[in-house]
Amino acid sequence: MFRLAARSLSIPSRSLLKSSSIRFASSAPALEANRSHLLPTHPDHPPPADVVTFLQEQSEGLLSTYNRPPLVFVQGKGSFIYDTQDREYLDFSAGIAVNALGHADPEIAQLLFDQSSLLIHSSNVFHNAWAGPCANLLVSLTKSHGGLSLTPSSTTSTSTSAKVFFANSGTEANEGAMKFVRKFAKDTAATPEAAKEKVDIVCFERAFHGRTLGALSITPNPKYQDPFAPLLPGVKVGKMNEMEGIEELINEKTAGIVLEPIQGEGGVWEADVEWLKKVVGRAREVGAVVVFDEIQCGLFRTGTMWAHSKYPVECHPDIVTMAKPLANGIPIGAILVRDEIVKVVTVGSHGTTFGGNVLCTRLAHHVLGRLSAPTFLSSLSTTSSLLTTLLSRLPTLFPTLIPSPVRGRGLILGIPFSHPDAPGRFVELCRERGVLLLTAGTDCVRVLPSLNVSEEECRRAVGVMESVGVVMVEEEGWTKEGKAGKKE
Ligand SMILES: Cc1ncc(COP(=O)(O)O)c(C=O)c1O
Image 1: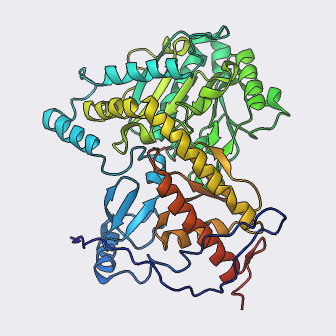
Image 2: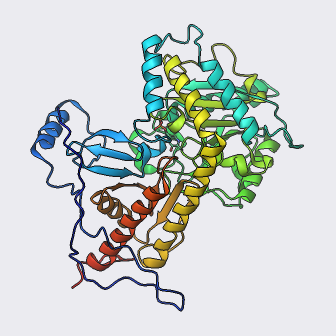
Image 3: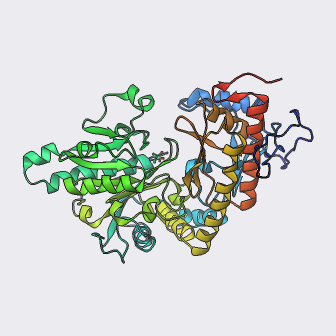
């Protein structure tokens, strides 16, 4: 196995690039890009011999479903993660929006030790000590933070409470939600004929809901779907934020609608409130169930408990699915269902072996308590405002590369690029300077730090991004037509 070396970070002392700065020409004070990270400090290539051997041996047993750089992470602390060469990376991907409280959190580590010393799993044949308290906390936090139309002061609220089913992942949470949608349609249909007809599920272009066959059926991306067709029948695909055609799209045959209020994998696109009002209003008219997939954007990533918490209750859903950060990296998913739908989820309707075991629900209970603390949320608000401000410099500094404003809310932010090859190169160059980011959709780099990221860490990460912008524009000659070749 790999040995960890003493930590050190070599900072380049000289610049290979021209000294001229990228400036924003206007009467306003010139904006200058950070040039402190022009040289790679964490090159992917060549990987050290022990990594090459390890990856070679790994490839004998492990299916290669992922395209990964040749590095192996072995340790983390807060927003930092370390590879086998003990190189320190600032993790602004947070394990794809999972590590809300960062890496190697001491309280999480202690809880894991305490609970695993007591009991990890006893199956859903029996009750356990933490699934119930965790579910109750999810419901009470949703009531106090607003969501699922449970806001007590609201006069238009039709719900008084909600209940939770625990699954193991995001895709399973969505599978369960789709089953509840179908069952609600069948159980509440006026006639057996109507029950047979009301089976359609509506989803939207660019959505990502998971990789199992049901969730994949509502993830309308040919790259993911085509190799596995035929998929679930009765799926209708609409366009997010398109007001035209909602009446035809959502009709008497629609059992449910599934959407992300902020599309994550699709490129950080937020739903307009007016569009949501129309979609949810139409769903109410035809008796369709509304599911919000908040697996990536929920659980405080936007600064509020749910991305939809800040929307008027007329555009709240009936079901919310969640997963990723709920237990800070221990696999868990959950379906939060408002009371009208609760009635159809009866004994035997759904089940799982692992879902909601005592280990993951005790951790989730702890994570929810920490994320919802007012001091945590106030600091999240300060850091996310700073990060948004810092990132907003990028389109001004590199208008041909990054032609429009940064998208998103809170700590789910997307940098839009003019050429589809540019996001991948940007992510690679940032990684080679010690900052981990993700691509998303066709034009976007996603910025998803841990929710307890510090202001200093945000400054450092954006500093690297600015230097990478300089490298791409000045050194590699990127324009909106792509990489034009190295400039002299
Ligand atoms: C919005 C959304 N839904 C569903 C999923 C699937 O979750 P999982 O990978 O845990 O199955 C993801 C994963 O990225 C997601 O972002």
